[in-house]
Image (tube, rainbow, N blue to C red; front, side, top):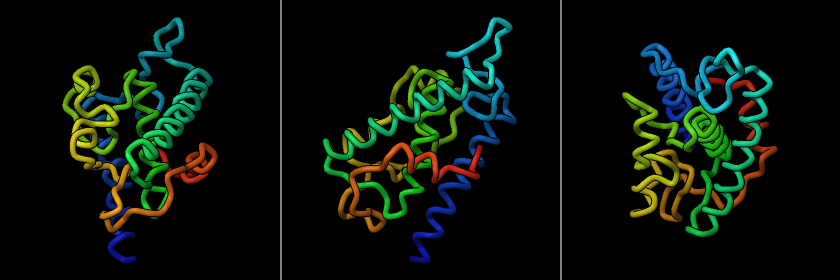
Length: 166
């Protein structure tokens, strides 16, 4: 269990680090409330309400996608569902900011170009081709962190993300 806790802590820190690094390099898409190219007010900036509505809708869509993909690929979420919740929230943020569910667990020099390329859009090519999920969202039975569940609810995703923001 100690290895699991360290792995989960590393995943959360990695996502936070990548978000901060992208912000510092001027790539603030999906980080805080600075620039959301899909939902913008007349002055070019998204309002808090527009962003919140878009993020809720995207989070519901990414949760539904995750549940369907888990069943279709016979994979499971991590034994600690908060890992799945954090990844789903990151995918939703990227869906709002970029129009695509770009993997939130990686650093990109140019997020918009990567989203257009599609290689790292969820499910990414390594997952589709080899069932290898870097984010630990879709785990095969032979993975030591694999849980028993093929389902996570939207309410769980929201609750497990409380108090954590990038």
